[in-house]
Length: 257
Ligand code: MG
Image (cartoon, rainbow, N blue to C red; front, top):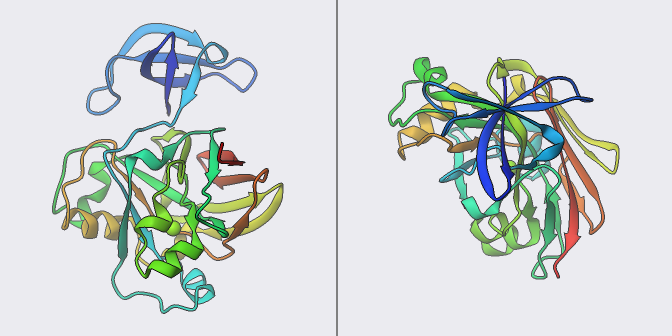
């Protein structure tokens, strides 16, 4: 099931995307999609609505250096335990929204990531029960002002500008994420290409680790880390993140107005 979030005539709702690319429709969900999903019975043409980020999380918990080859390219050790940091909810944008190049930075990087969407209020989740609290998966881009990240010695400023967390195009609720392809293309050229089987700390381990620190609430997102091949973007560039079994998230880098 592809769960989307959209606005129509000023109202925001969740929906289930149906049909093929030529004739897509959205079956409108009553309230939120978590727990027992109820449809209102109304269907609208996808072309009649404006798609939004598929979820507006209370927090995005991101994982640093979770692929060995990426840790190596950053000149860092692969961490024994997950490195976690937060991206604010205000950094989230959706498919097609512009990534704004901040005037404080000279080095803006893409990072293709598999994003986990939490579906239940939870804490201290044992890894064997992680799948019970996961609602689905989407594509994420952990946009990073690399120069600011390095200059500050901790990551908040470099990771947190508005528009630094593209998510989408939808939440895929039926996916086994253990071994799927993940890639990034910049202006059509493949820059990152890996598989989630190479995650150093797998998704159940991340859910257990993060939920032992903070309560997770429905809609919260865990970005699982980026593979090797990260690199810079310039104003005008088009960056696409594709995760096998989910879809493609494309955004363009725009100048700050
Ligand atoms: Mg990252």
